[in-house]
Each structure stands twice: as C-alpha cells, then as structure tokens.
Length: 314
Image 1 (cartoon, rainbow, N blue to C red):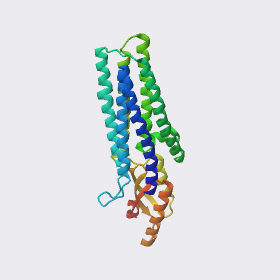
Image 2: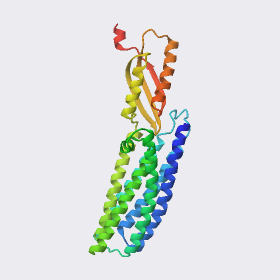
Image 3: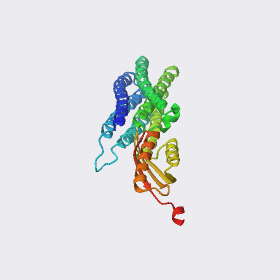
Image 4: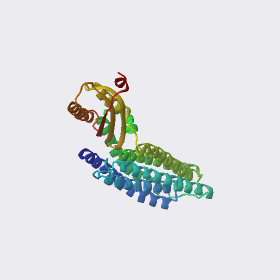
C-alpha cells in the first residue's frame, strides 16, 4: 500500500499539471474561437474542456483507489482507477462526437466564414506551449517508469496498467495533433478563401477525439473486468514456481489485475512427495515471498496444494 501511495502521488502530480494546463487552454481557445469565428478553434475549446473534466475524473479515481481494504472490499479499491478512466473516455467520446463533429457539420452546411486570423494563430501558439509542457511532463514520467520496468517506451505504454499517466499522455498527444489540424484548416481557409476548410478541421478534430476515446475505453475496459498479468510477468511467476524444489508440478496458474500496481496470483501446485504439513507451510511462505520479489506488483498470493491425477493413479 505504501508503494501504491507513492506511485499514486506521482500520477496525481502529472494529472494536476495537465488539469491546470487544460483549464487555462480551454479559456484561451474559447476566447480565440469567439474572436476569430473559427469552428476549428471552438472544437479545440470543447476538446480542452473535455480534457479538463477528464483530469477531474482521474483525480477522483486516485483519491478513491488508495483507500484501505475493507471486509466488503478485501482486495482494495485499485480498480477505481480503471472505472473513472473509462468514464473519462466516455466523456471524451461525447465531446468529440456531439460538439466537434456536430458543430463542424453545422458550420459546413451553413457556410459560415471566419475572420480574425491573427487571434486564431496567437491562440494556437499559446495552446501549443501549454499543451507541450503537459505532454513533456507525462512523457518524462512514462519514460522513467519504462526504464524501471526494463521495457522499451512503446511496449511499456501498450502494456502499462497505470491509466492516469497513459490517459494524460494520449490526451495531450491528441491535443497537439488537434492544434496541428486546426492550424492547417485555418491556414487553408485564409490562403484559398474557402470557408469549408475550417469546419472540416473541426470535424477532423472530432474524429480524432472519438478514435482516442474508443482506444482508451477498450484498453481500460479489459483491466476493469479483470485482465491477467502481462505475458512476461506470467512467465516469470510460472518459472519461479517450477524452479522451487518443493513443488513437483504446477497444475494451474491464474493471475488477475487488482489495480495499477496490484496483482492477484492463484496457483494450484503439486508439492513434492513426502512433505509434512509444517514443511508445506514453510515452503508456501518462501514461495509467496519469492513471487513478490520476482514481480513486485504481486500483492496477493494463494497456493492450493493439490494432489495430481498422476499421483492418485499411482
């Protein structure tokens, strides 16, 4: 629990920085969009508003997840991180589908024209600096965690169970891409004199939001319903059990994610023949400690001493 609290504190700092950045960016983009009349900038304002709300969800999830286990929740509240991240993904999907795409389509049909290009470009420049600082913070934390896990960055991002840093990293990446799309749409409208490019950029930003939301929702839903440990972790756990001189055979190994840094391990094993009850108890304690050393995220271990079918037959 102490380890989980330390990691939650690091994630909380990353989320708070992202929340403050997005709150300021939302107001900046909204003002820029109203002054310039740009549909793409207003879509970006909705994007940043959704990001700000999402970071609020993530902060709630961190606060709820570090509560101590109770008789009603014996494995703790680690999955709260996954639940609230899933809700944030749903909020992002709605912001992208309902406002960015809907408003962009409305502006495209009504052929509304934007002006005040200078205000739009200044707004995008300020947004780029703020979004970039938040993105760099999330990237630095992710790289540090990847080094600790001894995994390449991209592989760690795909396999990471920390939804908070992953959500911030992908939100900020999507925000930077959104700024680029808005810039391209506004610039194209200014150079060609065709107003369609600006609302088209708004629709493209909405599609981007929907894509990120669907990816994050799918990724988090697997953890929410009880995903297993990563393949490398499962292999390390099984190898540790098989290397134990006290175990004759590993019959079954099951793992389940209880939180970003919490794993449940259940193993049915056939202990070596001739072991007495006290020897089995000492061996189980030693195996428990060894499993936690090999995979530090292991927090719960249950060993089921089972007589194998082969031994029963003999």
